[in-house]
Length: 334
Image (cartoon, rainbow, N blue to C red; front, side, top):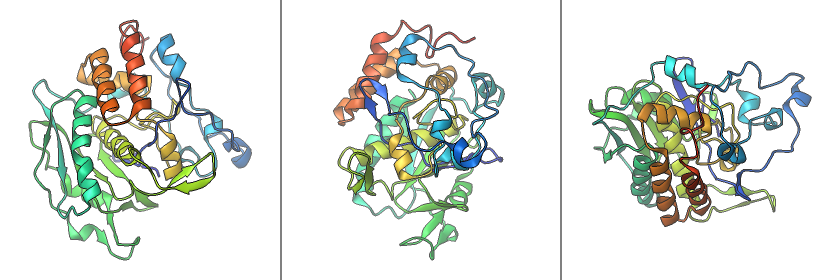
């Protein structure tokens, strides 16, 4: 499932989902038909340079996206991405967190799904650690009925763009970023459904927990299987982290495979992704929020272990062990 960064600085995103940490490395290399062979031209053209230098610790885990990632039906095959390097990120005057600011996570009215409600507190805790910023629970926000398209989907779908527009101005002055959540199904014109939508500068975003329990494709058996715990939580964390990072003006990642900021165009593609920020996007967030990377990794690894996210915990623990061998969050900037 994918979400689109709009020209109006809106970013639609479905975000990457399940972490595949195989033998200490993220993901498996795709081997399906190449975009070039199918379409006669390359999909990864005009990318911005990666303007950071990777240390060995990062290079062990992260691989650059290539034409082999532009498989039929993938996000990269459908949407042309140019990427966003560190210099470009700084130049867009990104949304910043002041020293005493906080994050807010708030429900949209009408929340009914008990499973979704059970995920709210873990998501709230995680976002506070992930962004190293205090987080509060916000008041319930209106769910505008004019955004409902009753004829779409099994139970009707809400236009995520209209919901996002309705949230403009709702984020308190003291909050750096506000994220609303719902258990209703969302869509945007041109996409069958989406998991979330975030705005680059208005400090608002919305995510849906409606499809977190959808069957997941098992690449070993080729069958769709009901997701076992903690997979629904992992999916919720990915979309929440992705959309809130958009609120800090971080664009879709077009440089590194399985980055949580990568666009995805299906649940299969989403589940193949990770919960981690690639070196480039990690450096954007570190530059913006001024956190201590090692302290962040230690907190994340402990939290992930407590919630059964053991592959992610192992990754963050390894990164904490390697720091301060890193010159900074992603190696010395060029």
